[in-house]
Image (cartoon, rainbow, N blue to C red; front, side, top):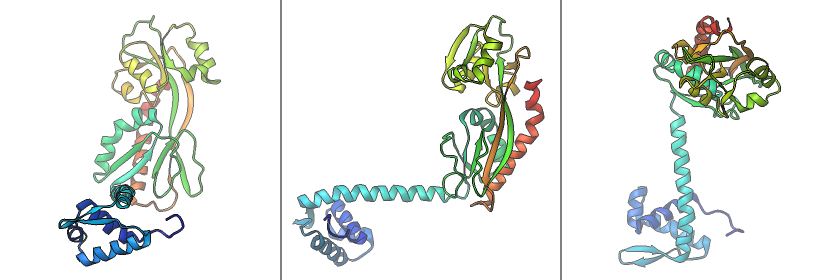
Length: 293
């Protein structure tokens, strides 16, 4: 087989149906063709392979050893194709908009605004991913990207969305002697590490995490003073679940950018969602900046 061309896809479909159903006639009914058509397809497939694939069994057929081997590979291949087609059907939904966003921003800023986004766009079904490696704006995978640096891709529009800062927050009324909650990568960062040691070095470390969402959760549980992205803590601050600690300085983390295709997107809804997110950011910028004061 390695030196011959692949069999016709039509022959393989007929073979798979006959193998699965144990009958040429039942395969013909499923495929909406005549029994003789199925018989002819399988005969041609057997001729090309050079081995019989079926033997008669009563009023039906059963697989030979060669037929069983072929059914295993053909069945798996067709199932993969069916799954792929099902996925394509899913992505043909004109309400789907794929948005990639860093996990802290998705959790703290974007997620609390999804209700507003869905109210503004009732047909929308957002696909939200925190996979920051999938940032390339194209016609298939990513419609909108929120990133900490502009993408600077050809044909892509980059717009400033928000500003962020590392801030100290705690549960209301937390005792002054509370310990510090922070990220391990912040402690070892060339920029953030010295800032932490300069301003929080006097605090004992209560817990060190490798996920900023866990730092925020620990703060919400009253376990200590947390150093977190203001955007991650946005909802908790707005609800009063956490309060900013004005005695500690904030460390600017720069601008957060939003990007989409510069020309006409694959769906008008993509640009509408992009514009809505910009409006949400502009409307909330004044209130969000309270943590800087």
